[in-house]
Structures are given as structure tokens and as C-alpha cells.
Amino acid sequence: MDGALGDLFSLKGAAAVVTGATGVLGGAMARGLAGAGAKVGILGRRAGRAEEVVSGIEKSGGEALALPADVLDRGELEAARETVIGRWGRLDLLVNAAGGNVPEATVSGDAEIFDLPEDALRRVFELNMLGTVLPSQVFGEVMAREGEGCIVNVSSMAAQKPLSGVIGYSAAKAAVENFTRWMAAELSRKYGAGLRVNAVAPGFFLGEQNRAMLVNEDGSLTERGRKIIEHTPAGRFGEPEELVGTLIWLCSPAARFVTGVVVPVDGGFSAFGGI
Ligand SMILES: NC(=O)c1ccc[n+]([C@@H]2O[C@H](COP(=O)([O-])OP(=O)(O)OC[C@H]3O[C@@H](n4cnc5c(N)ncnc54)[C@H](O)[C@@H]3O)[C@@H](O)[C@H]2O)c1
Image 1 (tube, rainbow, N blue to C red):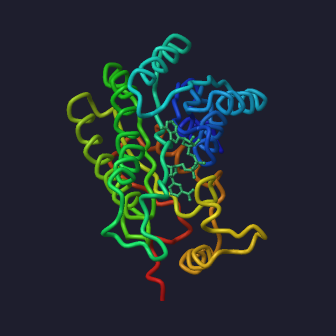
Image 2 (image 1 turned 135 degrees about the vertical axis):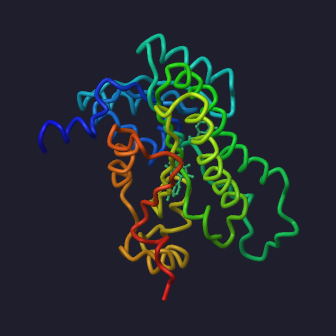
Image 3 (image 1 turned 60 degrees about the horizontal axis):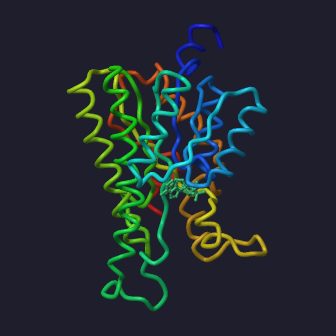
């Protein structure tokens, strides 16, 4: 790669915050940003786990900072913002990776939609929707004042085509995609074209929350896991590191005219009709 192309995708000197960076996909994305030259705030509820991710990045020669916070607690997010600004004096990138399903907000086995508990629906909406909006407000405000910055949200295959069972999660991720477009227009129009908001929509990756649904203890696929692989033209689950290239592109100068899009990273799942 020549120098000019290298700069096009470089994140050198940028300061980033990744929520849910204590998880499988958020952790891989945080390590990927650090590898591209960004300093990365590791935001998660588990302080010990955040410190582990930080030390992994530091061992690889990167710079990172643990930010213990719940994405649903504005006060904790504001404290994390102060820590980042105090340490790095700027904030350029936000990746909203905290999220996931709430098992009680699903209709599985003999359960019926009519009995779905309201509280579970609220929780899955709060985690995925509010958990994306609140950090975008708290960290996005810094970017708006600087006139530059990039937010990347994390959607799911469930947002576009309903996946059986996961009603609340699917609806909440659809809302995240809608918010991605809304916020892209809002920030660019009011605060300048240097502000961009996009999303990645991962296909199926083995995470902490979905592993038991997809793989049996002996390593074989569950019925649901088998169906997913059958519907994924690439014929396998994704590796978390396979999100990194798309993320770096979206965050880098290479994507400076790209805002309001949702990029599937799914081995072809969303393109395939199943026949
Ligand atoms: N794994 C997949 O196949 C897949 C597919 C599509 C989308 N996603 C999405 O990718 C994102 C990451 O998923 P993952 O598979 O890495 O799951 P994960 O459970 O490994 O990671 C999620 C992380 O978010 C953290 N988190 C949860 N609630 C939080 C809160 N209130 N405040 C702060 N942190 C909180 C968790 O502690 C965890 O570290 C989620 O938004 C998920 O919906 C995952």
C-alpha cells in the first residue's frame, strides 16, 4: 500500500469510545481501531473486564482507557466523557456496540405472543435503542461542538427480516437503523458535513449471548444454528475480526462522503432468498 492510500484509511491520533467493548464483537472492534492507530476508550459495565481489554491493547502497542459505565446511565456516560476529554483532549469516534437480546422478550417453544411480558420488551428496547441514543447524545455533543466526528451503530440481520422468536430485539434493532439515518441527517445538516453516522449489521457471529442458541455443548450446531449456516452463502459464522475492515473504512477519511448507511457484514445472509 502506498503512503496516500495508507492515510486514507488511517485513524492515527483519533480518540474513540467503544461501548460494549467488554463483549465479543465490541472487543474485536476496539482492538481493530487501536490497530489502525486510534486511542480507544473501553466502555462497559464490568470494570475488571474493561481493564483486561485495555491491557490486551496496550500489550499490542496500542493506547486504551477503561471507562466503567452503563450505557443506560447518563451520569456514568458523562463521567466517562470527562475522563476521555481529560486524558486525550478530544473525541472523534463512537462505536455503539453494547446491546443484545433479552431472552424473556422472545416467543419460543410453546409460548404465545399474547403473553409476552411487557417488562422484557421494555428492557430489550432500552438496551438496544436507548443504549445507542444516550451515548450518541453524550459523546455526540462533543463531536458536534468540534464540527467533526463519526458514530457507528451496530444493527443486526433481525432489523430487516424478522427472525423467529426474537420479536423485541428485531424491533429494537430496526429502531437503531432508523435512528442511524435520522441522526446522520440531523448532525450533518445542523453541525456540518464533518459529522457522520453509519451502522454495521453483522450477520451471525458466536457471542456470549447467542452461543447456546447456535452451538451444542459438543460443538455441533443446534437446529437454529444449522438453519442459519444453510442461509449464509459463505457457509459459516463470521469471525469477530471480520467486522474490523468495514469499521475502519466507515471511521476513516476514506468514507468522508458516506453517512446514514447500514453495511451488512454477513457472508451474504441478507442477499440470499434461501432457495
Ligand atoms: N453476535 C452476533 O452474532 C451479533 C449479530 C448481530 C448483532 N450483534 C450485536 O453486536 C453487539 C455486540 O454483541 P456481542 O455478540 O459481542 O455480545 P456480547 O454479549 O459479547 O457483548 C455485549 C457487551 O455489551 C455489554 N453491555 C450489555 N448491557 C450493557 C449496558 N447496559 N451498559 C454497558 N454495556 C453493556 C455486555 O456486558 C457485553 O460486554 C450487540 O449490539 C449485538 O446486538 C451481534
